[in-house]
Image (tube, rainbow, N blue to C red; front, side, top):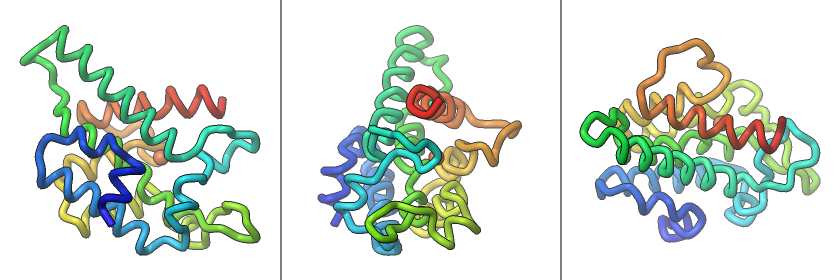
Amino acid sequence: MHDEILAIFPEINEIKDPDLRTRTAATWAAAMERSDLTYDDLRTMPFTLLVSEVNITFVEHVRTVCKMCIACWDVLQSSYGARNRVDRDIMIAGAMLADVGKVLEFTKQDGKFVKSERGKLLRHPFSGVGLAWEQGLPESVMHVIAMHSKEAAGGKRTPEGIVLHHADFIDFELVGG
Ligand SMILES: [Fe+2]
């Protein structure tokens, strides 16, 4: 099951700590078990339901944001070296899991992706933390998930949370703005 997740989200392989890497893939696998959606749905679902004409898939968004985070980290590292405050593994795990709850927030109805009943009650940052908690992800990763979206506006973010949040909104505003 993890093989399929790693094929869809190969950036998980960028996580150097093997335990963190396995738990990140396991969180995605557990989310898919709970979801109404199939792996084919996951591959094709649109990035967002907020914008009607979106030609970017959800998987492309997640991968692009993660790649932007890594590029950002590379610049910070080359500039600041040991003074770079961003933990690369935590940042990548957070980036790959920030939207994991979307497979519970979305469902498919008459061939269309729509918001699910549970998604109306708990948007993906909340369900994402629940899924990550179950799989034993560290609180530093759950923080990135919890703090990435509008619900956390005004809250204080860790360095990893700051990088992910801004990378996410670069892609979101370019696509949806
Ligand atoms: Fe999100």
